[in-house]
Amino acid sequence: MYLIILYLPRRFLSFISFVLVSLFFSFSLAANSDNDIYQEDEGLHLGIGAGYGRMGNPVYHMDDIPLILIPRIEYFYGDFAFSNTQLTYTPFYGENFQFSFLTRFNNDGLYFLEQNFSTSLAAATFRSPMMGSPSPGQIPPKGTVPTKRRGDMSLIQRRHLSLMSGVEWIYDWQYWRLSASWLQEITQRHYGGEKFLAVERHWLLDKHLVVLGAEVQQQSADLIDYYYGSHYSDLGAGFSQYKGEQAYNFSLQLKYQYRFDNKWQLITDLKYQTLDPVISESPFVDQSNVFSFYAGIAWNH
Picture 1: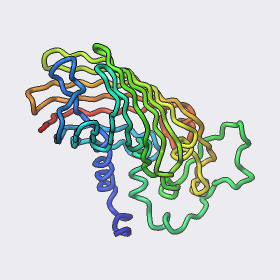
Picture 2: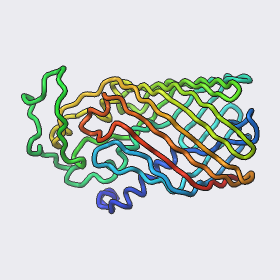
Picture 3: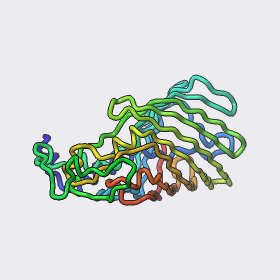
Picture 4: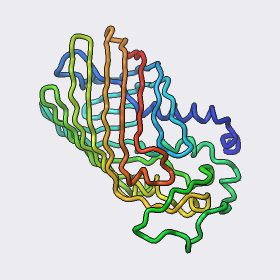
């Protein structure tokens, strides 16, 4: 089975990638009143979104990931909630706030999904230095900014999805939502962590719902170095030396939904993210700005 996967066509590998990525998205915003747009009834909720979109990928030689179908698999029971790939336990809550424990995957690993699936047999069994790859004596001294040098992505060390766990605090006030979260990696990939601070403002008019949000994301040096730093095998694959440091990323997001009835709705989602220079200086990163979008029709049960 392993050898079959290694030689799957590139288009099929991209299909596997966008199916996995789709599980990270959700379109479950209710729109009945201003007071309950984030609320759901207890029990199982299923749905599917069909449309078109792309998740921007800043990684070198990695395509943007197409989004066609977005599933909705959610289950709410008491203080527990499962939404696609996220598990949440909320033991403390009031009229306007909630404090939760949550577990979810880190999004940076999504950028390398295609590389994980398409690594060749030769790359998996034999890693030889390429022309121009630095020897230890050629590595730039600390404090200098090396010129980006790139090689063969199929020969680099694999970057895996990592599972994160932590806490989240949410406060709602009229049309605003403020949230803060802290997450630590628990799968022993990199032992890194990340923090989020976000604010949302929504407008609800009859069947129209607009949500505008802004977010600051802080990622630890260990996490950045695992995904965007140069490991020993990466140097042999022709990539320049680079060590990751703590980074801050900023993003803006705009959502629009139109509810035809209780089961059908139009959904659109736009997100723009600017990456910290610490990340964009990596030889594995091609762009410092990431743009993702999706538009389609959703059915909920």
